[in-house]
Amino acid sequence: MLPELPPLPALTRAEGELIDRYLEAVDLLGRINPAASGDTYRVLRAAQALVGVAGALRDAVTVMHGRGEAELHGETLGRALRVLDGERRTGRVALPRQGEVSD
Picture (cartoon, rainbow, N blue to C red):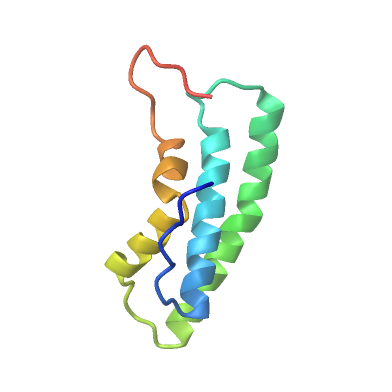
């Protein structure tokens, strides 16, 4: 049985959309990471998809700004990212230490 994850903090719909689109972009950037092993076709597909995700991410922030949400609450959003496995997912974007191969 898997351990129970902590609940997501309360987010506005726009904050939830921001988190979702951010993690989607991070996942694509992890696939694009030139230090990772893989084929160019996979990287090409991820790069093409990133264009649309970047637009959706921009739209989420635009909605937040338009609704008067002028500040990102980093602590709350950070908790949401951690619950959604953001540390592992963002780690795929980083350059591996010398001698390590990233997949």
